[in-house]
Length: 360
Image (cartoon, rainbow, N blue to C red):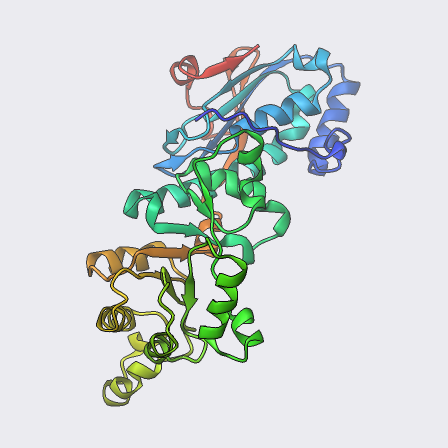
C-alpha cells in the first residue's frame, strides 16, 4: 500500500544523536581507514504472517539523513507497507559503502519494529472481525507524540475508526478520507453532571445535535439500572451504549449470581453482562441501540466473544494495538558482492532481492 505521507524527522538524526554509540565508533574507524567496501545491510524479522509498515518512513528517513552525493551512491531494496511477510524475509536492504549509512541501523530497526507491530496487531483484529467492528483507542496507553505514526500503521493494518485527530493527521495531509474520528462521552463528563447520565446526554445533544449519542452506562456499576433511567427520562435518541466496567467490579445485575457461584468470570465486562444489556435495551424499546465494549480488550477475548455470538457491535481496543511483538534486525550479509556475515545470518536472498522494488 503506497500512500503519499510526508513523515517528519529530527535534524539531530543527521548528527548521530539518535544512533547507538558503536555505530558512530564504527563510522569513524572506517573513515580513518579509508575503507570503501561495498556491503549489503539486510533488515528482517523473526515472525510469520507479519504486515510490514514503516518502510515508506524509512525510505524518507534515508533520503533526509544522507547528503545527496552519498544518497546517490547507495541502492535500496524494499517491500511496500502493507506487504505480508514471513520470518527471515528481507523487508529492506541497503547496498553500498557501509560507513555512509550504517549509523542509521538502530533507527531503522526501531521504526520497522514498532510500525510493523502496530500494523500486524491491527491486521489480526481486522482479519478476525472486520474494520467496521473495531475502534482504535490506544491514545491513553502510550506517548502522545506517537499518535500520528501509530495511527498510520493501524490504518495500514486496516483500521478505519479512531478517537483522536492526531491519529489520522498523516492521512489528512494525504487527502485520504476513508476513516472516522469518533467521540463517545467520558466518565469525567458524567461526573461533572453529578452522575446523571440522562442530563449528560441532553447536554451532549444540545452542543452536538448531529452526532451519534453514545451512553457510557457503567458509571454507577449498574448498567441495567442506567438504561432504565434513560428510558424514564425520555432519552429517545440512543445510538450506542458503551460498557467499560472495571475488572475489579461485578455489575449489580450479576452480584447475586456471584454470591451463589463465586464465578470469577463475572468481573468486569463479560458475556453475561453484555447479554443482559442487550435484553434490557430490547425490552425497553431500544432495539436499534448498538453495544460497544471496552476495557483491556485483546484478540483472544474478541475471538471468544465472536465464538459465543455475544451481541457486540463495536470493540474499543487500546493497548493491544501497541504491543511490540515484531522485532527487526539489521545485518550485513554481503561484502564486496559475496555472502559473508555473522554465523547464522548469511542466507542467500538474491532471488528475493530480485523481486523487491528498488531505488537508485
